[in-house]
Length: 381
Figure 1 (tube, rainbow, N blue to C red):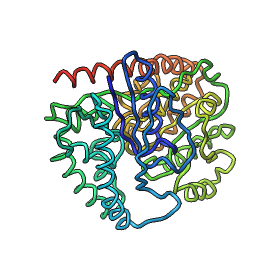
Figure 2: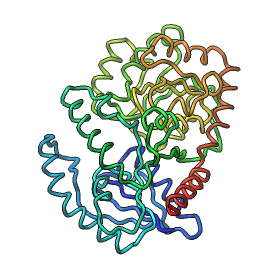
Figure 3: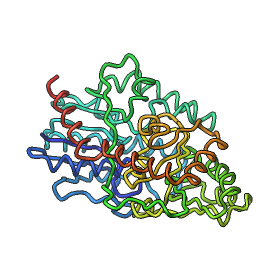
Figure 4: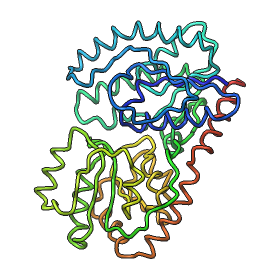
């Protein structure tokens, strides 16, 4: 089977890039598959995610984004429209040369092109890596809310109806947001590694990971950890990741007197080691498409304490068994659940053991087989 992934880039940090590479590599190992990854912006950034030599990488060299240059929203819109024409032409040419069985839209720039290509012989699939209405529901300004509602209207009332299949990451998202759609399937993301030596759970360290942006809600996690630190001054919180709110979060840490308890660690290209050197995983997002990092923490043998945001944590964590779910922004309860794991080593170890078992469900071999079954089903129709 010929499988093509369309994505903006695989050369910079991001969950979408990571899981796309992991899935492409796994599918390329299956007999009879030819896998291609077609990108538009692969010039900037380090090669963080290693693509298998068995996967064909095609760079259309469109370059929508200049990461070294700040551009206004209007400029981005103009650039996007201008580059969209050569992009569609180049993508159409490449797909006709490959003559694939299925094409998967992962990025943003090609999602409307695929539905408007004429005389296509391939099936098209749209992956969603966020909750369906995340743009309008979680915008933090009126302009963003209006922009989000307009984008949602066009996408969900017109463009996405033309896809042969929509794939979302959680049952929660499908049941909540996609009622009445008969072309929606659920396939979760795979864990990106296997951990042979899980955490010893002896480090007095809580860990969290993600972009330092509004949606990850690290400000709330820091506030909750202030409560934890009052009871357990010898425990620390390490937050891995980078983003535009780094200075603001560091100021919050300083003003809260948590300089010896909360640390912004920056980006790490070795998540597994960072997780193994911790004992509890904390998660504070306002919204997610899946929350793969929770699964990765479980794979390393960490119990998770997470806000029950839409969508992801509810699908992954069995509350009270392999972790705890907490109402969003209930900082007191978040702190209490973290403290319960700090204070009860037996509970911490039992939850960690159950978390490791739960993570097996997301191993890439299993997820690759689910994708193959979905491809075959789409092809048969």
